[in-house]
Image 1: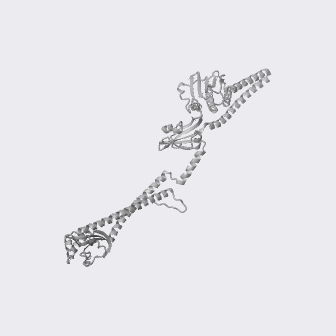
Image 2: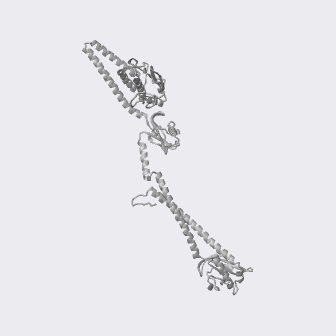
Image 3: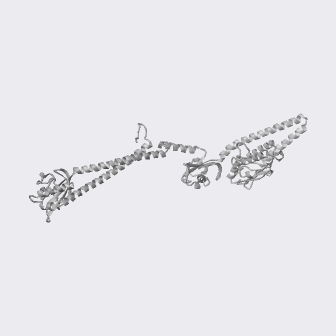
Length: 535
C-alpha cells in the first residue's frame, strides 16, 4: 500500500483516512508499548531483586557458612560452598563478609580476604536486610544484603548480586520482543486502515468530500428550482426531503418536517401505500385541502427492496390555465370551422334561391336561419354561465349538425359561473361524454341519431346527464370502459376520455353511474359536489 502525495495536489479522502487511522493506531500502539514496557521492566526488575534477596536469605542460613564466618580459616569452607551455589542459581556473585567487611568468598578467589567494595554494606553489618545498587569490583550491580547470625549474635553478612549490564541485556531483549509485537500490530493496522478506507470510499461512490459538498449544493438548487413539489420518505414512511415548492403548496412549516411520519405532516399523500405495494402511481389528480394537484408517486428500490418513495406534484390551476388556453383555441377553431362550413352552405342555398327568382323564399330562409341562431345563442348564454362550457356546447352543436345528429339540451338546464369545480374539469367531463355519445351514434341509422344533454347546478351540486340512442354497451364491457387504454374502437389515442372523466369525478369526490340497454340507449350520470348553489 502506497499513498503518493504529488506537489500541489490535495490528499484524497482515501489517503486522509489511511493516515488518520494509522496515526491513531500508531499512537495507541506507542502508548500501549510504553505502558507495557514500563510495567514489564518494572516487574522484571522487581522479580530479579526478589530472587536475589531469596538467594541471600537462603545462603545466610546455611550451617557451614554460619559456623565459619569470622574464623581464620573460614574461607576454605565458605568459598567452595558459595561458588557452587552461585553457579547453580545463576547469580553473578555471592560474597560472605564478617563484621569488619572482610570477604570470605568471591567470584574472583584472589579478592578473598580483602575488604568488600561498594560502600553500601554498612546497614547490613548493623542487622538490616535490603536491596542496593552499587559499583563493585565487577562493575555496577544490583545487590541483596542479608545479615548472618550465630546463636543470636550477628557474625557477618551475605550479599548476592547481579550485574546491571546483564539486567540491561535482559531488558533490551524484552524491549525487542515488545517492538516486534508493535511492528506486527502496525502491519495489521496498515492492512486494516487500507481496507477500511477503501470500503468508506466505495460506500461514497468514489467521491471526494468536495465533490459531495458540490453535489449537495447542486441538488438543493435543482430541487428548489423545479416547478413541481417534491416529497420523499424512507422505508419507514418518515419524510427525508421536502423542496420549497412543496412547502408552499402544502403550507408546511419551514422546519421540523424532516423526520416526521408522512401521515402526520401530509395525511393523504398515499406514499405509505406506495411503500407497501411497491407499485408506482402516475398522473393522479388529488385534492389537498382546497388545492387540486396532479401527482406522480414512485417507489425507490435498492437490490429489489423498497427503501423509500418520492412524490412529485403540481398545482392543477397552473396546468389548467395552460390547458384552457390550448383547448380554448381548439374550441374556437372548431367553432369557426363549423360556422364557416354552415355559412358557406347557407350562402349557396340563398344564392340558388335568388338565381331561381325565389326572393321570397330566400328572405324566409334567411329569417329562419337568423331566428334559429339567435335562439340557440340566447339559450346558451342565458342558461350556461360558464364561458368555457358554453363555447364547448356551441362547437358540439355544429359538429352534430354536420353529422346529422339531433343534439337536444334540456330546457331547464343551468350552469353557473365557476365554483369549486374548475372550468377545464367541466369541459373534460362534458366534452368527453358528448364525444363518446356522438361516436356511438355514427353506428346507427340517421333517424336514431339523438343525443341528449342535461346540466343542473343547484343545492351545492352539479349534475350532468348525457344520453344517446346508440347501440348501447354490452354488459361484459361495462366494468372496463373506464380503464385507461380500453376502447371498443380501433385507432390510436383511444381509451383515454372516459378514464379522464372518472379520474376527475373521483378527485372531486363525486359519483359516476352508467345505465345502458343494448340496442336502445346509453346514459352517463355525473354527480359532483360544487360546494355552493350558484343559481
